[in-house]
Image (cartoon, rainbow, N blue to C red):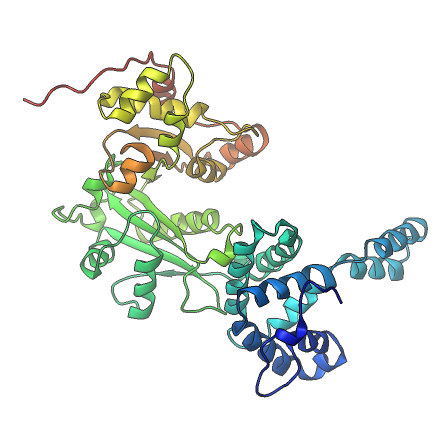
Length: 421
């Protein structure tokens, strides 16, 4: 075995004196067929007691000792190319799968093991920057987690004021877009008739939301999160609402990074609201523009620099702010041709279009830091989402309303705000 790890240093359990590596070997052997549940439980318990260095050693063990045999794969692939034999095909499939995938499957036997493996990946993700070779093992984690958390296993539940407190506590903790200050704030987001919250759960993690979306039912498309979440607003009766606004989408499990649920969640919530609130005919977001400030600071274009500086200095007019936000969303691109803004990539990739941009929409500290308070509506037109998704996926086409397109090409001037009277 590789000297990257030292078996003798591993914490030993009370019920089985073998170290974690011997237990893994046993789980992968015939003993694992008979005593798999007990062995998996012992390994997971042993892992929980490892320190940081020992966890690194464990992942190095997975990465090197349970990797594929490339030479053997090449030989079997050559045999299969010549024979097309079903027996050789089975051998090729077996050879091409790293042994660590089977180990992870066998570890996923005890009650609660799925959540523990999700948490195990959190540890792995922390190590990747310093140990990029461990990406091979992470690929296998992602492969299995995508299978275990596919749509067929996900359960959509509405979160309301009657939801158990232990889950509500997690909604407060996991909110990643607009911080929930306290239980009064949470009540304002769940209890009124014009508020909804939906979350995906997995049967193996029934008290752990995977992702949740907060929804406001409104009469019109909103342009300010400050107004939408105001303590003093007057709630709207459900039958008066015409618009469903997705104003916060929060992923809850760091161990499921890279496994997307947002698209599925939005589609199912649209279907759910279409049935329960048939008067709603418009589905939009009110979304942050998280990297706009960074983009403004990086400007070198002679046309854009004066306007960018005026926004950063806080002297720009709302027209300049909206024009620059539109310019950023439509033309700010990464090297691969996709939008620079991650929220834009998410919604455009789901088939939405950029509907409108707003200045002075988010006065919070985070809103100022991200975009100097600018926000954007993405429109989900159910008749066009599939076509929009296809154009974005195949051609990186950014779909936007005529209003936003016009704003993005407007002549930019570093106009200043009107002085206060």
